[in-house]
Image (cartoon, rainbow, N blue to C red; front, top):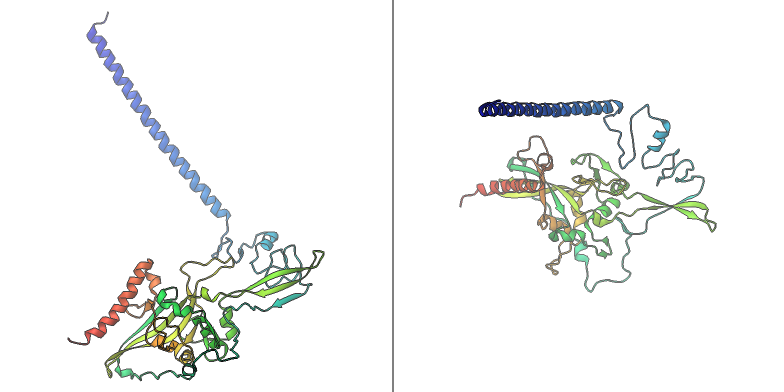
Length: 392
């Protein structure tokens, strides 16, 4: 017979032994879980690497875009290549093109049938001038038509002790900029600002320059200036009474003038020590639009100028058009006066101040709010320079 003391000692030993066994078992389970997680991670990494090796990708990728799949895999099957053509149509597939296919297809255009191109008659960017056959005003309106722009003050290079080049954008959706979207039609056509620019290009009053740069180096034709806004064509089938296709009609899409609501100005701020004045000279103006995909989607942060117009050449045209002035109907203000008097709201997108890499503000500041702050900072520096020249 064991004494009570021996029984208690044996019980304690059993408890200690069981505790040690349980701890060892828990440690083994933890080690097993860690090992299992490590093995699973290795398997996933190896699987991903194997899939990457199977996929041959070029620098341009092999993913579909709004313009179609343009994969560069030479080993791809020819049937896949035929199905991955761009959205402008393919002679061997059923992709319908607004420009027509060279062979009949299930969903394409049979070029053996007649194609009738119908010009657009729904206005658009360039409207048809329809002058009034009677005097459509109670007073004579020759005052605006006979105006000429005032000559600029001549500034000698030695007198220009301060010069800063600034790029700014006018957003016509702001209330103060609503005259840019004035939709009235007069004898000289639509009074929208974009229509005035296009009409001046069309009649040869000014020359449009390519937007490859903003130094007015490459002139473009009026047709190129208009087609740069996009639009495209719509193709529809013509059926007979039996439901057979007898031909096609191609209509040009009209571009909505109100979809062009931004304009970019290129200007210089100059302080002339001979006259002790700060002058601003607008050098160029350009309509700005976003990149639009073939499916109609507009890319964010893709605003770019369509073409440039040399502003001094445009002034003689702007003096012939009256700007809408709802605040003072008695003041007949031309577009040239609107720009010279700075009667518009804008924000700075680029300047030559502290910009050794010639970058726009959008390139080195990603937050839109801080871009506005940086533009205001540039404006304040120009203002402070002029104020620092005087003592009060």
